[in-house]
Image (cartoon, rainbow, N blue to C red; front, side, top):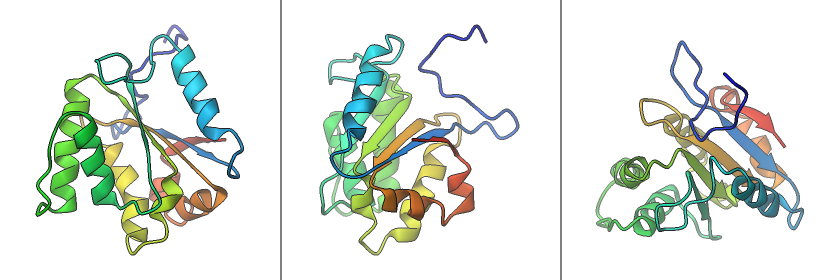
Length: 166
Protein backbone atom coordinates (compact mmCIF):
# COMPACT_ATOMS: atom_id res chain seq x y z
CA UNK A 1 0.00 0.00 0.00
CA UNK A 2 2.91 2.38 0.63
CA UNK A 3 4.44 1.58 -2.76
CA UNK A 4 7.41 -0.36 -1.43
CA UNK A 5 8.57 -3.60 -3.01
CA UNK A 6 7.99 -6.68 -0.86
CA UNK A 7 8.46 -10.42 -1.33
CA UNK A 8 4.79 -11.04 -0.56
CA UNK A 9 2.98 -12.21 -3.70
CA UNK A 10 0.28 -9.89 -4.98
CA UNK A 11 -3.11 -11.57 -4.57
CA UNK A 12 -6.34 -11.12 -6.48
CA UNK A 13 -8.85 -10.43 -3.70
CA UNK A 14 -11.81 -12.58 -4.70
CA UNK A 15 -9.91 -15.76 -5.57
CA UNK A 16 -6.78 -15.30 -3.40
CA UNK A 17 -4.43 -16.25 -6.25
CA UNK A 18 -1.00 -14.84 -6.88
CA UNK A 19 0.29 -13.67 -10.24
CA UNK A 20 3.40 -14.23 -12.28
CA UNK A 21 5.79 -12.64 -14.75
CA UNK A 22 6.55 -14.25 -18.10
CA UNK A 23 9.92 -13.24 -19.56
CA UNK A 24 10.49 -14.41 -23.13
CA UNK A 25 13.15 -13.56 -25.66
CA UNK A 26 15.67 -15.04 -28.03
CA UNK A 27 18.52 -17.19 -26.75
CA UNK A 28 21.42 -15.16 -25.36
CA UNK A 29 19.18 -12.09 -25.15
CA UNK A 30 19.96 -11.43 -21.48
CA UNK A 31 16.76 -12.73 -19.83
CA UNK A 32 18.53 -14.60 -17.05
CA UNK A 33 20.92 -11.74 -16.32
CA UNK A 34 18.03 -9.25 -16.24
CA UNK A 35 15.98 -11.30 -13.78
CA UNK A 36 18.96 -12.23 -11.57
CA UNK A 37 20.16 -8.62 -11.38
CA UNK A 38 16.73 -7.29 -10.43
CA UNK A 39 16.08 -9.95 -7.79
CA UNK A 40 19.50 -9.41 -6.23
CA UNK A 41 19.16 -5.62 -6.22
CA UNK A 42 15.79 -5.72 -4.51
CA UNK A 43 16.72 -6.00 -0.84
CA UNK A 44 13.27 -7.23 0.19
CA UNK A 45 13.59 -10.21 -2.17
CA UNK A 46 17.04 -11.56 -3.06
CA UNK A 47 17.76 -15.05 -4.39
CA UNK A 48 17.80 -17.95 -1.93
CA UNK A 49 21.35 -19.20 -1.69
CA UNK A 50 20.83 -22.46 0.21
CA UNK A 51 21.59 -20.80 3.53
CA UNK A 52 18.20 -19.24 4.18
CA UNK A 53 18.82 -15.89 2.49
CA UNK A 54 16.46 -14.58 -0.16
CA UNK A 55 12.79 -15.03 -0.94
CA UNK A 56 13.19 -16.13 -4.57
CA UNK A 57 14.16 -19.68 -5.54
CA UNK A 58 15.85 -20.05 -8.93
CA UNK A 59 16.01 -23.27 -10.91
CA UNK A 60 17.29 -23.70 -14.47
CA UNK A 61 15.83 -26.56 -16.49
CA UNK A 62 18.03 -28.93 -18.48
CA UNK A 63 17.14 -30.00 -22.02
CA UNK A 64 15.58 -33.29 -20.90
CA UNK A 65 13.38 -31.73 -18.22
CA UNK A 66 10.02 -33.11 -17.12
CA UNK A 67 7.54 -31.70 -14.61
CA UNK A 68 8.31 -34.53 -12.19
CA UNK A 69 12.04 -33.98 -12.71
CA UNK A 70 11.61 -30.26 -12.01
CA UNK A 71 9.80 -30.93 -8.74
CA UNK A 72 12.35 -33.59 -7.80
CA UNK A 73 15.21 -31.13 -8.36
CA UNK A 74 13.51 -28.43 -6.29
CA UNK A 75 13.10 -30.93 -3.45
CA UNK A 76 16.72 -32.06 -3.80
CA UNK A 77 18.08 -28.50 -3.74
CA UNK A 78 16.14 -27.80 -0.54
CA UNK A 79 17.36 -30.94 1.22
CA UNK A 80 14.57 -33.42 0.51
CA UNK A 81 14.85 -36.79 -1.22
CA UNK A 82 12.01 -38.07 -3.41
CA UNK A 83 11.23 -41.73 -4.06
CA UNK A 84 11.14 -42.42 -7.81
CA UNK A 85 7.87 -44.36 -7.58
CA UNK A 86 5.85 -41.30 -6.50
CA UNK A 87 3.42 -39.64 -8.90
CA UNK A 88 4.15 -36.17 -10.26
CA UNK A 89 1.52 -34.50 -8.06
CA UNK A 90 2.98 -36.15 -4.94
CA UNK A 91 6.47 -35.00 -5.84
CA UNK A 92 5.22 -31.42 -6.28
CA UNK A 93 3.66 -31.51 -2.81
CA UNK A 94 7.01 -32.60 -1.37
CA UNK A 95 8.91 -29.96 -3.39
CA UNK A 96 6.70 -27.05 -2.32
CA UNK A 97 6.79 -27.85 1.39
CA UNK A 98 10.41 -26.76 2.04
CA UNK A 99 9.90 -23.60 -0.02
CA UNK A 100 7.05 -22.58 2.27
CA UNK A 101 9.07 -23.52 5.37
CA UNK A 102 11.93 -21.30 4.26
CA UNK A 103 9.67 -18.34 3.53
CA UNK A 104 10.34 -18.53 -0.21
CA UNK A 105 7.53 -16.71 -1.99
CA UNK A 106 8.88 -16.44 -5.53
CA UNK A 107 9.67 -19.39 -7.79
CA UNK A 108 11.79 -18.53 -10.84
CA UNK A 109 11.88 -21.30 -13.41
CA UNK A 110 14.39 -20.57 -16.16
CA UNK A 111 14.50 -22.25 -19.59
CA UNK A 112 10.88 -23.46 -19.26
CA UNK A 113 10.72 -24.01 -23.01
CA UNK A 114 12.67 -27.25 -22.41
CA UNK A 115 9.41 -28.71 -21.09
CA UNK A 116 7.54 -28.02 -24.33
CA UNK A 117 8.94 -30.84 -26.45
CA UNK A 118 7.58 -33.74 -24.42
CA UNK A 119 4.20 -35.35 -23.95
CA UNK A 120 3.35 -33.09 -21.00
CA UNK A 121 2.31 -30.04 -23.04
CA UNK A 122 -1.09 -29.62 -21.38
CA UNK A 123 0.34 -30.20 -17.91
CA UNK A 124 3.07 -27.62 -18.59
CA UNK A 125 0.35 -25.03 -19.21
CA UNK A 126 -1.66 -26.09 -16.16
CA UNK A 127 1.08 -26.45 -13.50
CA UNK A 128 1.55 -22.65 -13.13
CA UNK A 129 -2.13 -22.32 -12.21
CA UNK A 130 -1.79 -24.72 -9.29
CA UNK A 131 1.41 -23.02 -8.08
CA UNK A 132 -0.37 -19.66 -7.93
CA UNK A 133 -3.44 -20.91 -6.00
CA UNK A 134 -4.15 -21.55 -2.33
CA UNK A 135 -2.74 -20.33 0.95
CA UNK A 136 0.86 -21.15 -0.04
CA UNK A 137 0.61 -19.63 -3.52
CA UNK A 138 3.89 -18.55 -5.05
CA UNK A 139 4.58 -15.65 -7.35
CA UNK A 140 6.10 -17.15 -10.49
CA UNK A 141 8.78 -15.89 -12.78
CA UNK A 142 8.87 -18.03 -15.89
CA UNK A 143 11.51 -17.43 -18.54
CA UNK A 144 12.31 -18.91 -21.92
CA UNK A 145 12.28 -18.41 -25.67
CA UNK A 146 9.32 -16.88 -27.58
CA UNK A 147 7.79 -20.33 -28.18
CA UNK A 148 7.03 -20.39 -24.45
CA UNK A 149 4.85 -17.28 -24.71
CA UNK A 150 2.94 -18.82 -27.62
CA UNK A 151 2.49 -22.03 -25.61
CA UNK A 152 1.18 -20.22 -22.52
CA UNK A 153 -1.28 -18.22 -24.66
CA UNK A 154 -2.97 -21.49 -25.65
CA UNK A 155 -4.53 -21.72 -22.18
CA UNK A 156 -6.55 -18.62 -21.33
CA UNK A 157 -6.70 -19.48 -17.61
CA UNK A 158 -2.93 -19.69 -17.35
CA UNK A 159 -2.29 -16.70 -19.61
CA UNK A 160 -4.39 -14.34 -17.47
CA UNK A 161 -2.35 -15.22 -14.38
CA UNK A 162 0.77 -13.65 -15.88
CA UNK A 163 0.29 -9.94 -15.31
CA UNK A 164 3.45 -8.86 -17.08
CA UNK A 165 5.23 -10.00 -20.20
CA UNK A 166 8.72 -8.83 -20.94
